[in-house]
Length: 255
Image (tube, rainbow, N blue to C red; front, side, top):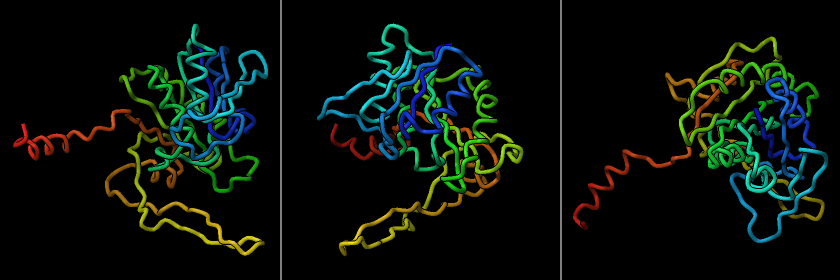
């Protein structure tokens, strides 16, 4: 099995090294094409107004001066054009990609790009209690291959990708794996923290909104609270079909 690895934290990120450790437990045919620098929050952005530059570090190891999407496009449309991968793995992200994070996440967007090419793609992220904790990736490292193997073996519908999040607990404290819905946060309570720099100008940090409870639903957010690994299937078709039917009724007089 040929596997392409990428991420949004950058080519030198520790999470990418962890992802390589995980991937080598299921294959020895590993390729890496990742952004040269951190591109967290880049979403599914594509570089169009400046050149995209490619650097070869070693055999099958490349970095791209661009976004996670640029990296996957460079890999699939150029580097591996004549020998495409069977699987795209994106991550392991430093911090969870939960709820609406998937719309901002370069990690998830890289997996989306692989899916657009018709290749099975999985995003992997490690939720963290402390982003600077040296052992923060231990749970992803210990559980990654165990989670991946059944996902690789199952049947996939076209246009789907999988979003995997590891909880912020030690490997031996993981309570299991949950197949989850995407959660939601209440962005009416988004934190915007104002600070002042040394020249007297204001600047701002954005914080996440708080969880919007969904009674009776097992979401990726609740899985993290329970110390469980979340696996959430996502679909590229963003059409809301019930609204389509209401729209047809609303505009029928114009036909």
